[in-house]
Structure formats: C-alpha cells, structure tokens
Image 1 (cartoon, rainbow over the protein chains, first blue to last red):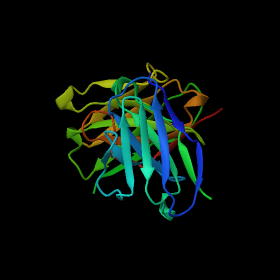
Image 2 (tube, each protein chain N blue to C red):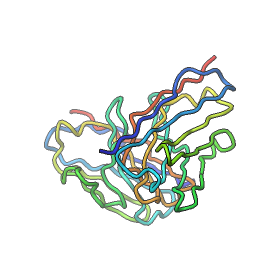
Image 3 (cartoon, rainbow over the protein chains, first blue to last red):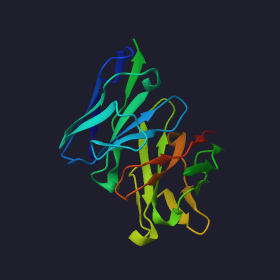
Image 4 (spheres, rainbow over the protein chains, first blue to last red):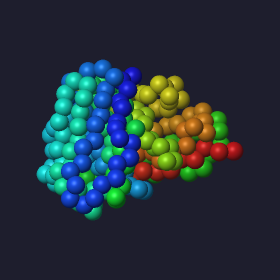
Length: 108
Length: 121
C-alpha cells in the first residue's frame, strides 16, 4: 500500500493566520489526493479532491496544491470554525486507499 | 439532500458476527459506488472496503486487514449498503462510516454519522 505522511501532526495557530499542512506519498499518486476536515465526534467532510479542486460549498480560503508525491493544504486566513483535524487521502489505487495520520489544528 | 445513515453497531464478543446497514436517501443509490471506513477510538481513518455500482460490475475490494472476514453487499431496490463482519477481533473496535464515491475513483463526497462497534469479551 502507498504510505501517506502528514506534517505537522499538531499545529497551533491564531485566527487570521495562514496555515499550511503537508502530505507526502511514498510513491507518485499523480493528482489523486483528497483532503478532509474532521471535528470531534463528527464524520469527515470533503474539502479538496484531485489535489486542487475545491468541493462545492467549501470556503475559498481552503486551497490545495501539488502532484506526484508532495501536496499541501493551505488555509489562507484561519477562522474559528477551522479548528479541527485534517486528513489527506490518496486514491491512486482503489484496492488500497490510505490516509495520512492527520494534522490537528489548535488554537494558539 | 443526500443522507447516509448507518445502523447495526453495538457490543459484540470476539469471534462473533455483526452486520451494519447504511440506508441512503436523496440520490439515485444504484448509480454510485459505496465505501466503508472505520476509525478506532482516538486514531486516524482506515479504509475498509467498497462496492462498485452495477454499471461498473458491482464488484468489491477490501483492505488486507479485513479481507476474508468482512463482506460488502448492496440492495439497490432498498438503497441500502451492508457490511457483514465475521470473526470479529478486538482490533475491529471502531466507529464505522458509510460513504458515497461520486465518480467511482476513490474519494468520498458524503459520509454518514457513523456507528460504533465494540468488540470485547
């Protein structure tokens, strides 16, 4: 299976900050990468698919970039509702979908 | 409005079986692949398996950790996906999520609220 490594695992930031989360794949996955946001006790929510396509209804302060093995999720101006855990997920091969370990965005 | 509602979770002893259901509404269920994921308490997300739509053959794929023990099926007439879990182990304890794959290529646009399965003696 393709291994996904996210960094950092925890991030402390303030409202208004620009935040960047990195996800690296153990082999090339082209642009087959999604990002999800999860709040405690809730199901994940799709933010970005195909590395940089914004899901309908998701605020434009979220953006994704990258291809191959290195990807980033950027929140341009962190809002109170954005404090959550973020996961990347590769879908290069449907026989082995895998996630990064998650990045918890905390209030500084 | 798309809704996915899981049911069937609970406490079960190791070695026993449990069947989860995912009841869908708000979309043409038969047109979509459906997947199951799980999340152990305090841990990250893990893909369990999926079933393609009939248009793509209705075939299934499973994670290595559950292959041979878990089976996914679907009843398009009832808009329900099932996860049959046999030979349960304590490490199968998790919240199980049902999801919709909009393009049958592996990312999920809708998730259910999840149902907790606890495997313990």
